[in-house]
Image 1 (tube, helix red, strand yellow):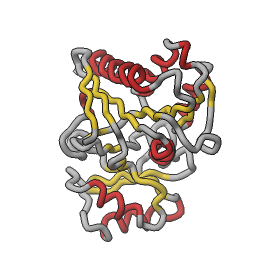
Image 2 (tube, one colour; image 1 turned 135 degrees about the vertical axis):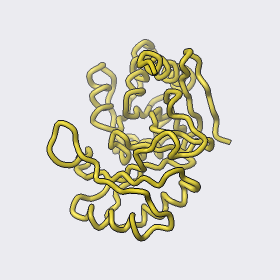
Image 3 (tube, one colour; image 1 turned 30 degrees about the vertical axis):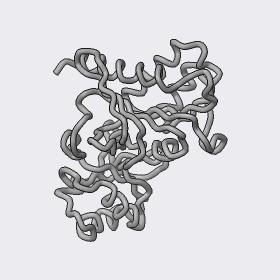
Image 4 (cartoon, helix red, strand yellow; image 1 turned 135 degrees about the horizontal axis):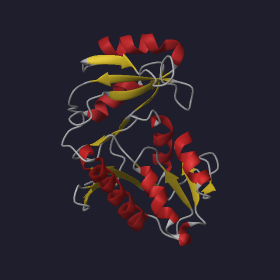
Length: 239
């Protein structure tokens, strides 16, 4: 599969989402994390009428995107209500439930998504599926407090109604040891296969002591934009 086709899909989805959901009337906009969000910022920069807006990041990566491009940086502490948040996803199902956290940013992403009046997902064609766990097979990302990661992993393996195929502590690249999130936590990836009921699984995992956040975003997105290989965009709206 051509990398150029994938990037074209990301760009098409991001551009259309910005065109349809960010306007000069907005005061505060949430900026997600990941490779597709780079094109969200790229499109914003092409529209001088959007320069006055305050942009709230969901990670260190998106904070740098905002600052390096001369946009107005805000924070969730200062902006409790956000007009719209646009973010990427690792996988999106038929009901617009999403797996997020492949970049280990799920806590701040969920914080900014929940503060938004409207939450929009953008992704390329590879991320669309009927059921979560079909395309994204690395597992559900779970942010955990470091001192109890082994306890949490054991509970995920043995205390949930759905038994995982495997549970792994995510290890870093170009760094010895585990991935450390922007919040100073670890990430555990739990592979449950295809998810029959992601909302119920989310609730179960969240109840485990030591779990900081879960990369399942259920019934949150209003719309999802998928950039196709031919440059077209498939738009889906939550019913």
